[in-house]
Image 1 (cartoon, rainbow, N blue to C red):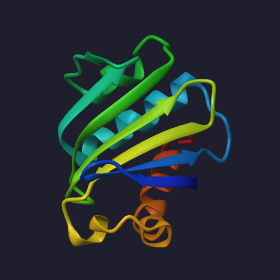
Image 2: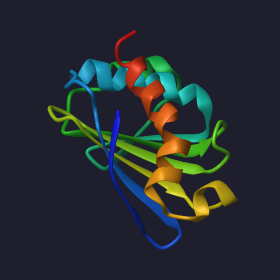
Image 3: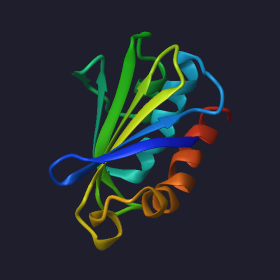
Image 4: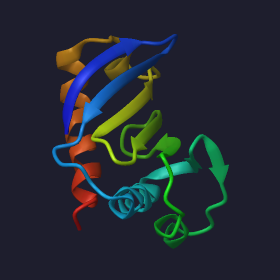
Length: 128
């Protein structure tokens, strides 16, 4: 994934990313299901509406929509994260709480270093 931009949003860092390749809805839901294992208080929203998920397989069968978002406390980054993936586009928006020293300073190079591998792992899960 390629980091396009970052901005400071009142204690959060909002970033815009571009997928390497466009993907299907099924691939988006597959990556969200994969990510669910690495979050506490995991929530899924489809077109900005919360959906009930009791197991990760529930995510993979969600009906196609315009966007899918997941959020929760990342066990890897140790901060709240919200990632929105848009269907039929290569656009991804990631919002990360500025709750640790690693994320307090909004700088392209630092943020890319912290998040690039994380976002790449999410994208790779789409192709498993």
